[in-house]
Length: 381
Image (cartoon, rainbow, N blue to C red; front, side, top):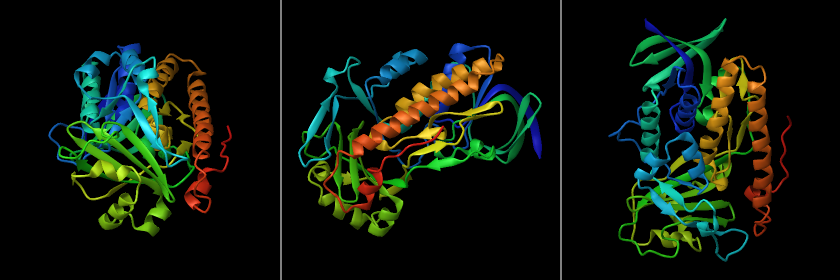
């Protein structure tokens, strides 16, 4: 049974970083707009007992995006752990370091992802954004000037009218796919990860930073997180992961033990969860805009984790998405094509840099993982 009808200027489907940042940017640019976020999950609410999320490291330049969104002072009060650089064993068995001390933006941050998501939700609410948790979009239909979204929340159906819809559903790009848009997947990368308590571990020179290390079948990522935690992830292709059976705890530990550097971070530590798997492939939509809608964040394009651009890209692109939305609602016919151009050009630049970075690792000539990434990859307009 349909219980009621609601009307908004803009509905954002997805309450992650991209969705919240876009909502905040919209209210900054056009405070008079009524904006709603529809989030199907409840795991961004306080006191939720969900699995830990993969921690994120954001680069120093993210401070500029947070300031432009007007949430910098509140972010600083979260007291996230400062990050002073990254280390890598990539293309060589030797370690090299990229110190943020040479950055004009200062240092970066290691964040507890759940805490950061809750922070973004709180900041969106401060701007007057309506946020509806446990709300799924069942269907959508465009009639005249409005989208009609049929939603389900706690077994109650609601029809939501919206002048504009923003897809912020991550790699699923759920709303975009309903509009017959194609997801173009460049690879099949997955991440198999575990969290560790390192309160009693021996702190090495990698103890407080982000570190990557390659091997024959992929590469290891590890990052220190707040509250004496560490995340370690193994990045490889889905078919290789299945063949290795690396989701098995004993197999994961076996390969971790063979690393030259990463394993040292887990000495005297205690694992908090068994290995989990998450999609980490590069993806691009055949179109990130349509009839009174656009996609933002990972829904529009998702990048290889080696780029460390996940959250930063969401913060940046959310502002372009907000400008495009407001301009479209004002009647600008070029608003959405301009946004599409920005998304496409950014993605092309990313692909070039990704290919150049993977080309630096030449120690595994017989590895299908590395061979796949060292091919030149391009996309068409």
